[in-house]
Image 1 (cartoon, rainbow, N blue to C red):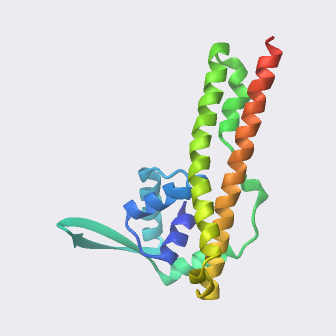
Image 2: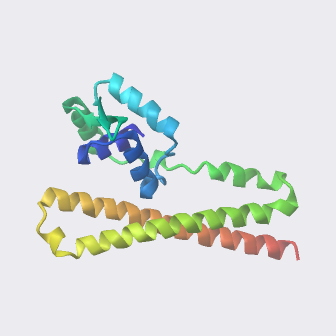
Image 3: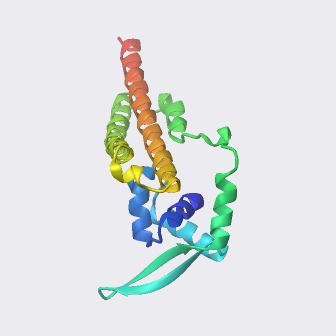
Length: 186
């Protein structure tokens, strides 16, 4: 979560509300975006000197704006330039799937269909985001941007496409599992 927050703050200063909204809009596949997890990460980043928080009043409401520091940029740069780790691919829902045979037989299909429905909603959101990314990359505005900004957009769009493709795979896989369950109980 800390690296995601640092990356978002490199792009622009944000409030906790803005961070949560951005994470919910396409980045939720990577991390849980509960307000509690974001607050805990912000607190840790502030205490480590990687970000600062300043209070402002806007329309009579107090807001904390978080900004990245030079130390935060350095910390993020070391992480972003390190190799990708294959050991980090995890899917906590597989634990439930692994033990689903211990659950109530009559509820299994409903549980799986409910999961598929939730994945379809996420798929819809990521499809919109990846389509917007494709449109941006094909636009005149994109071609006139500095190379660094174009690179950011390309990799953000690649991330959205990965999420979209992964969810499409997950949906197909669970649909096949339901078919196999039905065949085994005929």
